[in-house]
Image 1 (cartoon, rainbow, N blue to C red):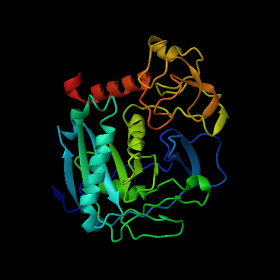
Image 2: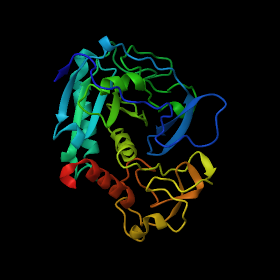
Image 3: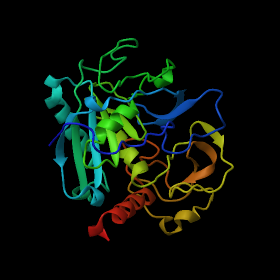
Amino acid sequence: MRVSRLTLPVLAVALVVATAPAPGGAAESPVEWREVFSPDGTITQVAVPVAVEARAALSEVAAEVVPIQQTGAADQRYDLVFVGDGYTSSELDTYHAHVIGKWDELSAVEPFKSYKQYFNVWQVDVVSDESGVDNDPSLGSARDTALDMGFWCQGRDVNTERLLCVNQTKAAQFGALAPGADQVIALGNTAKYGGAGGAVATASGANAQAGQIAVHELGHSIGGLADEYDYPYDRYTGSDPVEPNATTDPTGGKWSHYLGQTSPDGGTVGAYEGSRYHRYGLYRPTENSIMRTLGREFNLVGRDAMINAFKAKIPELR
């Protein structure tokens, strides 16, 4: 399938890249809160300056759309769209191998494994003039790429080294070339571990661990799940969160029918303090699910939230 120019609606891209509202008070200057994924699996958030992102000219938004897996109409499936950056025309086979690897990694995790046949997966062949991404292998190295991906994001703080940012506006424009786009993932042509969360999530294409970022992000975009890590704030004093896996109730009454059960992430369902960017005042269902640390499974609450979302969209499951 080849799309000659952009004809579908461009995805909305929020300035606050974290899927939950940015925690804490107002900043002195505009910032974006972005999830940072470390090689040891821990997830944190850092604030980076707001970038003014250029849009690609409509004449430039042209790319081949390759179906990796197509099982039904877009309005009856979850459509996962990969866009690539830093892949030259001679490296599209490499990009394809990276897409297949990330989809294989994602679809090996439950509940994606059991519901794999209800996904459409698309590869958009975005071609760059130069190979690689900015600030790889070192800070200050630059590449001429289509989507402006790079490490260290928009800051030089050590916490942003693994933060692999992309021009989300351009990436969303290319992602919209696919027949449907419930989640867009931008793969960078790099083996260095890194990624970022957001309307367009990012991951290192050649890094074998980076696919876990996509698993975590789909927990947000499909299941409506909260992050379960507790950085960067201490105490939460607001109302009970809307997400199914975070609560102010220290008894865990929000997920009462799961209490005491053994969870797929290896824990026992209870109420564990520390969640949704706060160390105190909020509770999560288990000690350590993938919404807290990459490489883990979804807990029972999160897994069922994902399955319920599948059933809500996919007619065959109702």
